[in-house]
Length: 117
Image 1 (cartoon, one colour):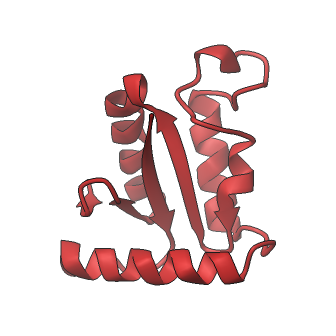
Image 2 (spheres, one colour):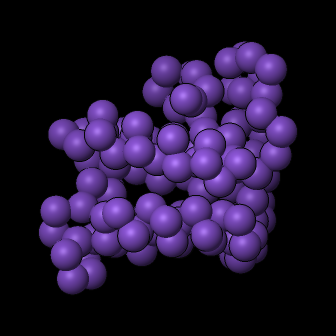
């Protein structure tokens, strides 16, 4: 079982409901635009995530909380949707959402349909 987060560029939605609407729109768009390289902001965010915990399959990645890898493969244009192993989700999702805020990105938790932090 995994725990998922979505992080994207753009203005933070005014409510959780608006966040869910934007999340669903971006997920639909990303399925149509598969293969679009990540924007520089998303690529830098991924680099910062991986500075904390390496990609699984990379040296040091055996203790990583990420659910799959390489992490950058989960990024399409201005959005990244990624998974964490359930046992590490509290720690990793808190770090990932705080990091998104530091990078001026929006973080959305689709399990709880809430904006984070």
